[in-house]
Picture (cartoon, rainbow, N blue to C red):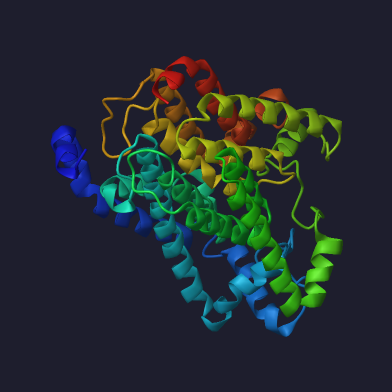
Length: 435
């Protein structure tokens, strides 16, 4: 469908939304900056300050010997990423922090727009439609971005100056390259180029923060074995570069600090949306990585695999989302700002094969639409716009300081994954008919 035909099909309301897309995006970015300046965090950017200090320590030494206390005196914040991340942040040291902070907000908003546009292009490729980024009208991603800037995982990324949107961009970019190389009437790239580029992206992201290494499972799920291998090789190269430039810090990280969650925070806090946090809040104490956690991870993996089995021949976006949910839930710590992957999740629910809207415009005549996709989209949006902290405050006002109800309502990551799996399994007949 060409852009002209899309515009004609969308009608007056859609046309008005398209004209308002850029102003709404700019207004959302501006409002977020005002929120950051005037809100309770008041331009703290606590995590970005840790990255900024790490950039200085790369050349001066002591990368893992500091903990910032100025803005979080009750929980000093050390640098907990691999040494390659310090090298990645190194250019920040040459800029004043206010410039870095404003630039980080602009970068996060811009990359979120790019992520959404790539997600829509992946869906187009799954339908056999033109899938270059230019084939996706920019107005729809602009509208999505304007709204996504206010969901809990994204707004906490902006408040803290977190890197998760950057890492998500690497993962979605890899998926976009794989999707455009899938068989069908789309312009394909050479397999060797795709394997190398997608593996490189996943490997670099893993070198920065380890957890994006789960993207290797996505590559395997899409049959890109050599890409998965190359992602491992790339990650190994990041370790080698780190050892070459920062030998003592690299040895210390991978032999002493790796796996130590103590400096990160209490796993039972409501902010931890991983299974360990959810189960710990349910039983009233930190379950650690014992039997209860292992059983929960095994059940989650089985459910996510069952959902993947239904959609395995479908678009690459849903495979990516399912793999990332497995990584987020299985990790001992997944703070709410790690769940920026809810944006691609919502994009698939709304614009995928069960959604009312299409990836190229506001309508999708060929979709196997079910009202349950709308129910899930609305429920997820409401849950993540409210956010775990506001939900916790409301529960405390209602006198629910602990208990099963509180544990369930604060398990937003688990609820999102269960909702998606339930939708896919319940609609497996429709999905098999259109995939």
